[in-house]
Length: 204
Image (cartoon, rainbow, N blue to C red; front, side, top):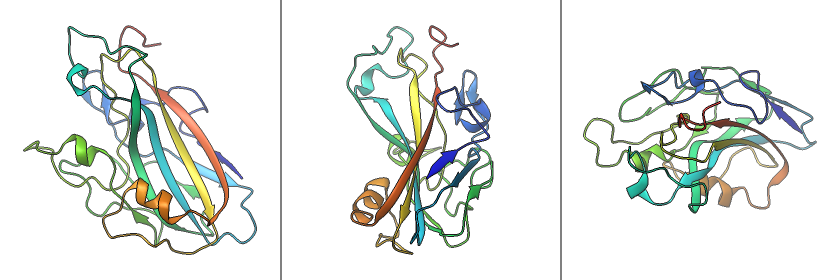
């Protein structure tokens, strides 16, 4: 199975159009185009995750003018998209079809392929307690890495072909729920990734 995007080149920077943040504030926050082929026989649905494995783990260092977050700081996953029950006949997600702009407090019913379900992304926790932005962030919300991070962040779009039409998920599910529910049901996986940074010290 092969996954690709017309919105960015594999292992190259993702345009700000598809990010949540840019140097002067919020960006376009459109979901990128994705398409796939070579689907395994017996596929009954797909699941899609977008994961940044380069999120800082020391919150006190984030967003400070007087500190650069070192490359070697331990990192954690930050989930930007979790979608399940994508119909077996779907082969493409159009750019901007699931997210097109910033929704304060999060998209509650984000658009997507017919019948698909979209879970919470990690901006739900990031904005928790923020009076203007706090809420449940469903669907896709793009990159917004700290401007003072010396590590260029990577964004992995991972598509899974599954042998079941629907996954056993709670209504308010996360990427972790998807990963647990699809154990033993994965027929194939494909991935593509892009990079993004807002640090002028390393900005290409």
